[in-house]
Image (cartoon, rainbow, N blue to C red):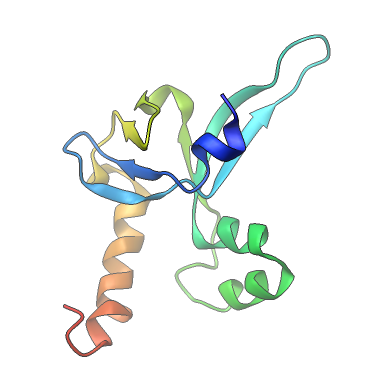
Length: 115
């Protein structure tokens, strides 16, 4: 598997196929004489912004709901890797759901027709 090509930016879906965001980063462990092992998937604007560059990271840090650690999903909570990364989790049982609720209230809800 080409992790960068096949995993980054893929959509995450919960047990009910509801979108939960996208894979923004990958956490891996490397030990001498062993293959690289993925341990977590990171989701969050700060992780994405770090990939995009210093200026994007500075902008993301100013957003109140983003000024926190990215959400990490243990690789053992992944049911299937594919076009969508299917999780064994329900959206509302994760911090991702709370951020989406904040985003709907404070950003999308303020855009005319964005409800």
